[in-house]
Image (cartoon, rainbow, N blue to C red; front, side, top):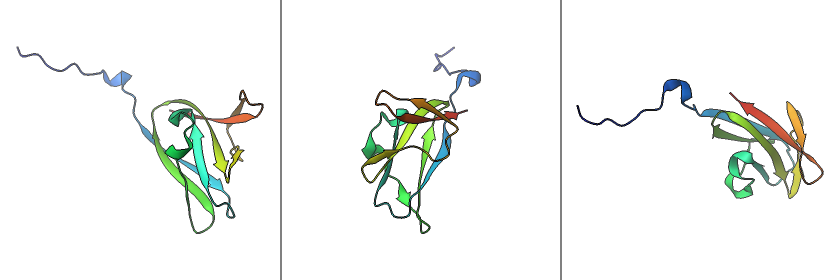
Amino acid sequence: MPFTHLMEPKALKRTVRKIQFEYDAPSARSVFLAGSFNDWDLSASSMKKDRKGKWQITLQLAPGRYEYRYFVDGVWECDPDPKECVPNPFGSWNCVINVE
């Protein structure tokens, strides 16, 4: 019998999900999304503004718990309607998203 490549059991597979982030800031010139999913790298997740002034980005995230914030015109901002927030080491708050 030939050797076959070992497969990960279906129960252990981590299905990646598309998660959309939105930030309403019609007068903003730039909005970036940073968080534990991209090592807080601002250049990794530049958001795009639609005609109504809502900034959007869709990320593919594996199941897990992620902290994030928006960087709006050079200022860190929280999600205006977060499901959960946790304190960060800088004396402010990070928003939390749980991807199932």
